[in-house]
Length: 93
Image 1 (tube, rainbow, N blue to C red):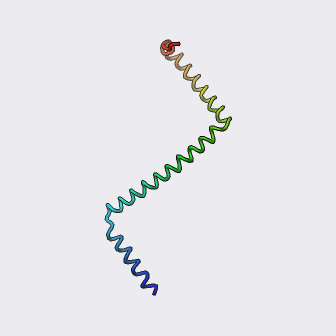
Image 2: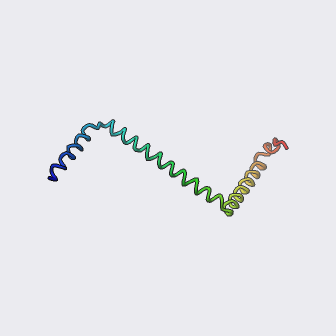
């Protein structure tokens, strides 16, 4: 009894394998990869947005970002004033 149930399944698998060409298999892989990538991108972008929003709400993070920005601006100003003083002279007030 079990042999009669498994034979059509084996036959069906054989027919499916037989009918798919390499181009068909490549197309199926491409479609599956595209679907998985789009799903992962959506989940990843949502997770990143949530983490960034959570981090920006924190006061210590804001203070740290401010300190980093100040350091960058100071270094930029020093570099411009020492190596490129003509740029500062062109700034209109």
